[in-house]
Length: 352
Ligand code: OGA
Ligand code: NI
Image (cartoon, rainbow, N blue to C red; front, side, top):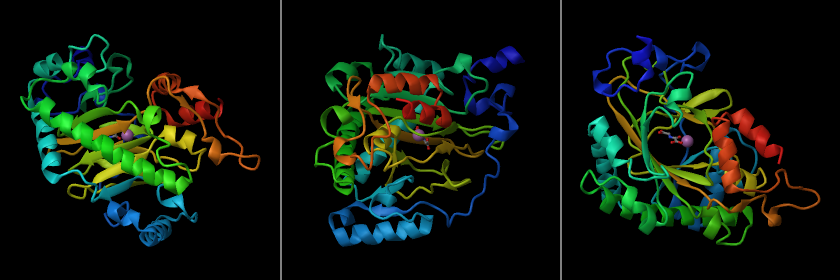
């Protein structure tokens, strides 16, 4: 039994019970699975953000609703935000989600072979996490990930099946990069940084991660994704079904999908550059017993050699830098070695 449990379930739909190695310790289980749906995160019409009055109104509303008493960037602070009117066409979003679902509907062997062309394994397919063999217990998900920058270099490693994958996902990647720039420029404005501060190396290496959570016979026993904060500048998530939860205080809030909206959340890199002014929220994914769920996270990462440190314009004698500087690849190596444990990552970034 144990040996069978060590293997990723190669055929999820046939799984009729949660294998022992996917059952999480009691204190890590999702707890209650039904949530007060009134408590969800604010929705922002991005167009409104070109009008300062709306910005202030939205910020105030969100601040009151969520108990933050800080003005200015409180809205972006600590909580992820759903963005509508973002400029990415509904058709492109639908086509993209369709190819992602088609990909995950393929046979596990085909998914793995479609993602095994890259000798450096930056394009890959895995079950649970990248550390499957070393995990104490596993997560109920499959994942496909690949870089979305330097397309001439990396696209040859992207899946070739489904047949439209490369064509559709390339267009999606281009549009999401533009959306990322738009959002980052709003953040610049709010923080008082020069427009374009995040362009170039700070946002040079976006990566796509397509999560697939098969229906789970008992969602109370396991998680799709452990609680974590993202190691990105910001993350732009596309989801169509319930499953994402954000931690607010000591409560988990369901992030109810709004059709064709994106969920934006702040990652550690933005926390460092903003000198702690902006802080991401811990989040996780729960499973459900009836339908598969697919979500696509577009992580805006700095280039590997980019130096990340608090922006000089945001620090002075009264507000000294809370973090030192390091290359992004060093941050990433540490993040991975702490298995995304929030306390350990926080300790690490505060120690540099
Ligand atoms: C992630 C993530 C949430 C989801 O991939 O980092 O938080 O709903 N995903 O799949
Ligand atoms: Ni995340």
